[in-house]
Length: 212
Image (cartoon, rainbow, N blue to C red; front, side):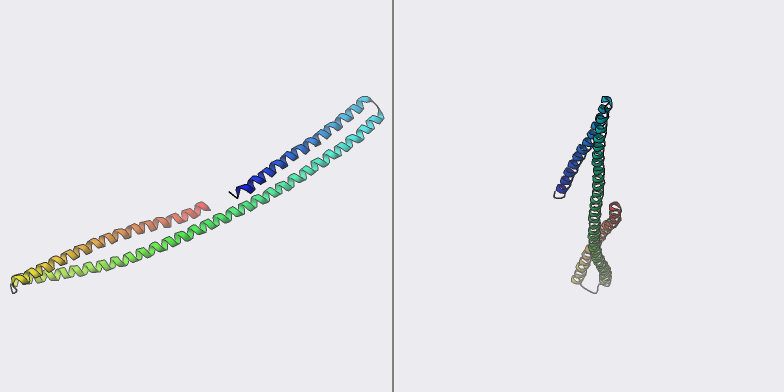
């Protein structure tokens, strides 16, 4: 809002200067017309003295009109130079503001990308840990299954031992299933974050190119 006030006042001053210039030029044209009428009237009268006086007055009026026109031309040149300087200053300010916005956008995107990369790294580490747990639970499941088979085939242990082995086997299967589900969820989350990161990296150069 504050930036609009100087522009409005500048426009008001420019309009006032244009009205003043138009008035001065009208006066200069009026002086030239008056001098022409004086000379024409003197010629019609046929008097040498009147003609001479009309000529002197016409020359004076012509000089005055020329001076007014020259002053208006000089003012127009000064005003044009002032307008060009204002335009150059406004363009420099606009360019500086756009540069600051682009820098801020680039820093913000870099920060977001860095944060997402850290999240992805953490999730990948958790995924590796979960995969190790799956391998471990699978190995334990195989061990428990072999033990159950040996216990069942050899019948060296009683029914209580067999039931304990079966419960242990069931528990191992549940933990292995939970670990598999956890791995699937982590892999899906990593894929989503990688896709989001790729879209941000694609959007950052496009924003800089558009601003330029």
